[in-house]
Length: 514
Image (cartoon, rainbow, N blue to C red; front, top):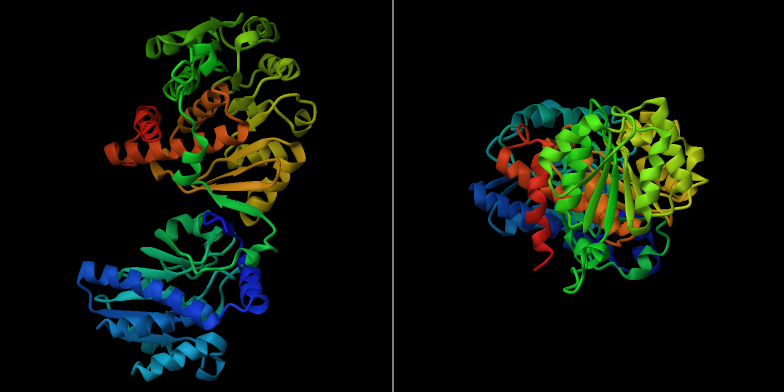
């Protein structure tokens, strides 16, 4: 099994069913290992914060069973444990019942939740909370007692560190949406494999630090997993980035043509150009309108500038510049700051018909596209829309996308045979072969004008260096997020700006040269 695999809640259930039902994996042992991992993480936090008491909230399913195990283990480590049990005693079954009885035998008497006002009186600010109320199977809005309980915990959450089992209760296990109420976790311990809800949408905000324990599922357990979804982390990127040859010259490393800018948006193409250069492209030519040239020239003396015939925006005749440069060019970058003029639209479509080299299109470049354009292109293509651009381009409602992110982006990539990098707080990359990658890097401060232009430049640079559209996109997205984390440490999320990302690129890329 690839330890970076990420599962939907439905696939996670399939894996459990095969592992225990067909392959004979002992559920009691799996639960003991999972609950022990919860206890281990809770104990470390309690020791660090000098907390002696733990309050554990256990639901009806396996998460509740993991909570019973954690209660037992923490009591053996000398911690005071209080267990609040949502199901009635007769409703606890299977592996959870085994560990419930084991907990009872250790002298821990749970409080069954009949009256929430009783629970409210017992909530302790000087304790650690373990959230084992709901698992990753939640896929609809909360209601009834469960919702009221979670709302009560949220109301009284003050100083208590929170360890969530698999996912914070109230977060959808597949799309990461908050289904009505959710308790913020400091650490989420996910069992056996990552779940989509650990990273997407509200999940990213509520999960805290996600820690995964390998429960030893046999590879055959994953035979009915439908989607190939993976976490894009340092391990993945280190396998993709190759060193620069000691004998390489600038044309071998790669020439990139960047097209963008207009009279009012010179900064976008400037940021894309700077990030392309800082990401290692051998030579960069920028085709831009006259009124954008002074900005780019003042920030980058390394970029070779070609002016469009119209001083404000692109027109069809500008394809002549590309025709002259194409022979030595390895890749193209189109879109940052290019504007939405009708003449520019005509240029974009002329370029699409002419081009045969790998290309990344972003920003206003996407404004000029429609789905039918993709069926006639004759080159490898990456598009990098944010949610609004994606919904406009493919006529999808944002609400629909939020419910089915993975399915929609996967189907769209496969249908049009293009790499799609959907930008968000947690970005998602889809390949035409059906593979999906989740990007956990990045910080809130990256939600700033120009951040996407920096990403476009990085991807364009790696395309020009000879990386495939898939590899260039994964590398670009990952180091973009890492550069954001460096900028956040230096400037803080509120104060960082897009050019700070460019500054951080060298620190990130240097790590992969060691």
